[in-house]
Image 1 (cartoon, helix red, strand yellow):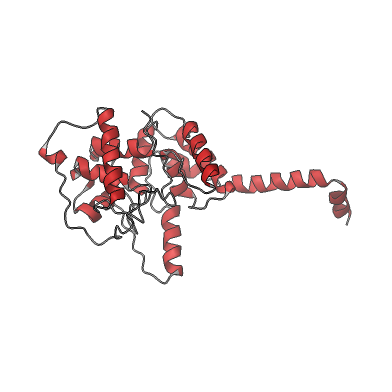
Image 2: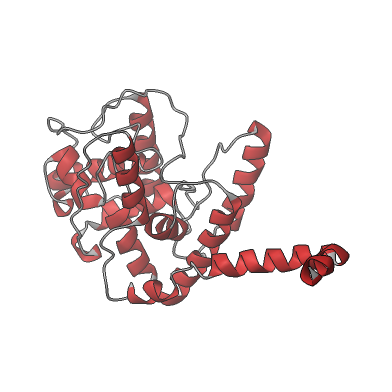
Length: 277
């Protein structure tokens, strides 16, 4: 009773204490030690994989994720460049957050009164995919920022990029670039051509709606945009049959590319898509 009377008499302090308790509880869930281990250990199962498995189970569907880890130095440079210019053009210069892109994202969201533009950097996407969820709630975003800064402090840019390329979602049950290369083009990530790499990069913002081997307007337009950004940065390698082959093999079983609009659905991989030029 005495404690209850104190709470009633000190309402502001009570609210502040409650907020401090909630913040402390959330901070306790930050995976401090798991982040440090990522320097040498590859993550096995990510939070997004678990979320997708739970969603499939709730819908009574089978769920068999595909993922093959591939070192960064086994992925063609032009494929890595395609992903970076599509998702986070200032990746190698920012400290985890692209504040210009965040401001642009907020302005567009306010103007359109919805979450219309993704503003997440590659590091933020790693934080979300590894440890969090696709939820839009403010608490998740705060935790994402904390984890993002921890990732930048503990890991090199190259290691962050390697993790990103191996864990992001590229279709229903398809995680990582090697699984995506096998699913859509029938080859390993190491054998991807420039056009195939640009196509894979093009669908990162919306991998559950579009497939990289599709010929819809969305994929074609964004692939051309990625290649244009690469050319502007002198990232396109010399003409070579192994690189410029743009033929699309018979697609493997994966999500149909039925959505033909050009709007960007940022409900999955929330990349900023800034070119940094």
